[in-house]
Length: 239
Length: 179
Length: 179
Image (cartoon, rainbow over all chains, first blue to last red; front, side, top):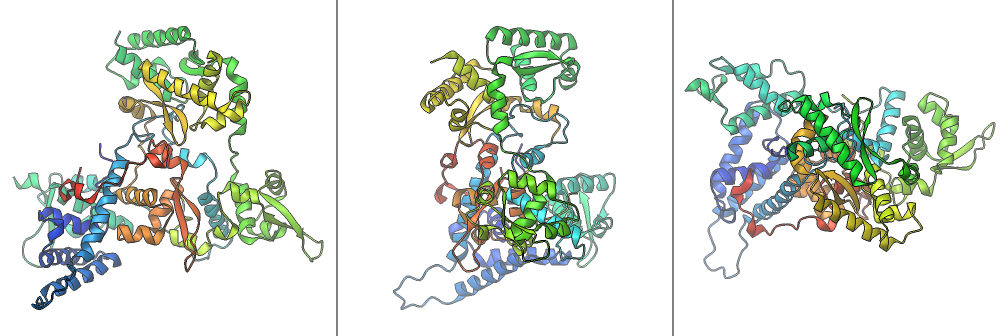
């Protein structure tokens, strides 16, 4: 069992970049910036085409990539004796750092985790009190104190500006839903995927689920003609 | 009798918070028959009795449960009585208001919470989390409350300025309603 | 070494809901010196390891705790019918940064992950895996985060120094991205 390592498809710009490097089988120390930039932008375009808000972080990386690309195009000064740093280091360094900590995160996930792999005495049997609950009952944390105050304020001043985070949707569940929806059907319109979705976060979950299914090779997404409606179908149906 | 079945059942008894009946265990291990499970439970019980440890397996409430022996009660109850106290939700809210609004008077806290907080203030005073700072120059000279050094210790804060501001709480999206 | 002290300590470990540090046990049994208590704990740990039962004593979060062995996981999780706490990859990565770089501020975490982590910090705070340590002497006095004892308990770590060392970049191949 993996520890939810593939829940989010692309966590952030670095994650997407690493993915592109991997599928292109590129050496991280010698990234073909032009190719990668192109693919990176294609991905962003895809997101936009699907009306998904592209996080600012992705855009910042896009401009960084384009900047590096333009630097790489500059003709090398013949007479330059001074060693100029490879402009790609600007992304290679954070990428390497990111890989390092991602590895650390992965190692954490493979430890004998309490309530997943090992159990202490007297864990609750009714299933309702999972870890979350347990974690909160130990002692009062500072978080709880802050939370308590927020709740009071909200009760007293219902109109106070509060940022409600929309319900969190499970990408896994969405994946199951999509697969169920496709069952027995030849294809399915992409836009219909979201017809029942009631919030932005649900839509994002649906979309992430779709990306994950694509990545797993469970479904393919296609258009009959350029600019046509996007449809999906399971790979099985195609065979 | 398979040793692995015995250890599986033992692990279940160990991790359960309530006594486990043979039937419940059977439901979890349908591959083994009830009779066998009952025998294993009995064997485990006998085994622990013979091991002379500080705990054993007892048959209680139609089930089996790990329990410490009565003679260790004094030590265990001493331990349980010293574990950190959990604050009620009401106490936590009151404490939070005092922490953020201090110096605060009772009326202010009650205005925000919408209920009487006399009893809770006493609890917090007793726990040493709040203290009386003085009296306000207002009719009735109401008592002013503030947090204590123990409060900082309790929440592992270096000083009061380390208390996150409301804006910072907002930025974390704290205060989200439970689903 | 007295057998009765060993069994008293065993009973405490057995009844405790959190890992017990030698110091905590010492506070409960002031008649015995700390060194002796530490020795007994080590002896108990070795004893259980040798007993080959379904549970053993582990050194976690600067204390000792009875825990089941990983191989009994399927049966116990079926019994508890809880979905194990799921930390998203984002949460795990954020947690890893805070664990390795602590004390860490949000900006540092965001620089390393390349994305906003506000919501994730909230989740980790809520789960009690990280805590607010204080504020940094920087413009805006940003909040400093660190990991908690629960983090150690959760990830089966004796203390922070037992975190696996960060791998050198050269050892990391891009190819091993997905497990």
